[in-house]
Amino acid sequence: PAAKRRGDVVYGGGINRGSTLLVTATQTGDASTIAQIARLVEDAQLSKAPVQEYADAVASKFTPTIIALSLATFLVWYACARARKVPRAWLDDSNDFLFALLFAVSVVVVACPCALGLATPTAVMCGTGVGASLGVLVKGGDVLETAHNVDTVVFDKTGTLTTGAPELTDHLVVARRQPTLHQEETDWWPLALAASAETASEHPLAQAIVAAARDRRLALDAVDEATNLPGMGVRARLRRAGEVAVGSVDMMTAELGVALDPSVLADVDRLRRQAKTVVLVALGSDVVAILGVADAPRPEAAATLAALARTRDRRAIQVWML
Image 1 (tube, one colour):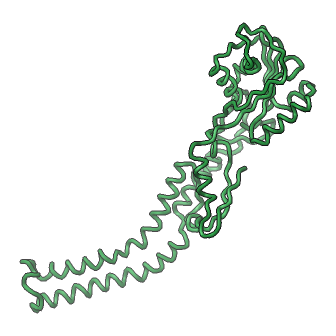
Image 2: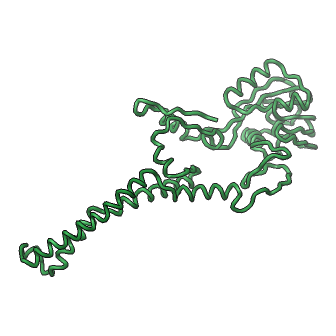
Image 3: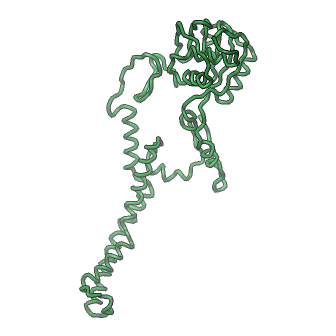
């Protein structure tokens, strides 16, 4: 999710996760972003690839030639049939006209001049249509034609290489001050604190934390009061544990004035290098845990990247991730 502030641009189809906002419509109808995407797909299906222009040029001469050859074939076989220059067994009780017409039609069917004019636009339309249904937008037939020259592929991570559903991957306890939560002694108590504070939030990271706590059957504390800090985290007063804050490093340092130990910063940096989102859990003014949250990779992601990186024609396709 992307944090939005006053004056930022939002797009139709975006999902508001748990905040109230006032939106001013600046573009409607054909000028909207979704309409422009639909128009892009339509234009791609109607556009001509360079090879199609070449095929059209050939077909403009090839088709009349085939028709002329078909007519000549008809006349030759019709004359032969009328002059009885062909075996009677070939005629098979057919009249001369139908006998010659059969050869003429065979020439047209075998040559099939229509294939030159239909194959390329049909392939472009099918390719762009199927791609759009799978979330891949192609700008035109010329792009499809030059796709074999691609040497670099750039992927967006979230929702493309990953499932788009964050999961808790790391739970690092940095303090041993455990509040009473009416549950057995466990090293997962910071997760129970974080999940208790995040219970009412619809943020994907909050939902991942709550889901992890429920999967481990942790007892959650009741929330007496909660304050959401957009783009940063949440502060809550729990009934038994007291003041709890769950959020980013900036929230802890800038908003709450919490001093972070160098060992905590080192763990934060390590998790960030692993492309994980870092969430700190504070009880009162002390950071008690570091949570790492990341999207689970799609099952087919590794095989896809390996196939792209495989050497082809003595060169490998470079793979980059945003």
